[in-house]
Image (cartoon, rainbow, N blue to C red; front, side, top):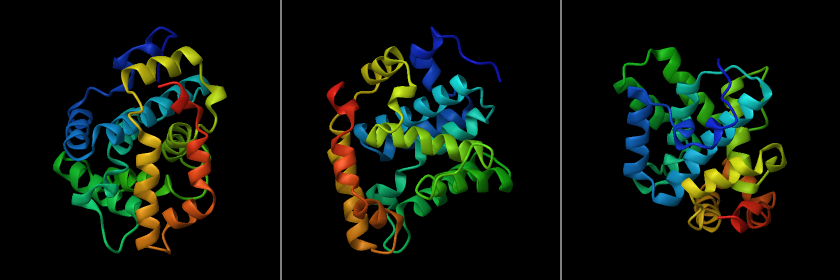
Length: 208
């Protein structure tokens, strides 16, 4: 892996993976997610990739990007399951998408695993680097966890390119709905742990 230069970290091209699979994931995410949820998915990847580059972590960029772009599609009406937690439903979306892209079974399973694990207990980079990175990226974007680890210029550029658009309130409403309908799911534990307050305190919502 070649680390990005400081200049490249603040360009929109740094926040995409321009491969057939990357473009397909972006197209599907844009079709089913509203602008706030889509921007969150891109920002989650960007935070994850930036963190990896700053910490010298080698990872599969395409795998992480595809997983990041579709990780919350289980929250959208067409893919919301009445029985499965939203992250498990999203994992199945990833498997179907990547099957159509010709990914082998093992790689499809990895995309599903990364999406499911982003709502589970912390995973270390040594255990599973892509799952760890998606956890880092989503935590930074949803609740501001670890933002001090990022260059303010990077964060400002990211928010300018992919603004929040009221994401915090909208996201909490989605996970609270999941928690109410599926009280045994990870979203229910997340809501019960004080998610509303953490999301509301996210400093990103005071920047853009």
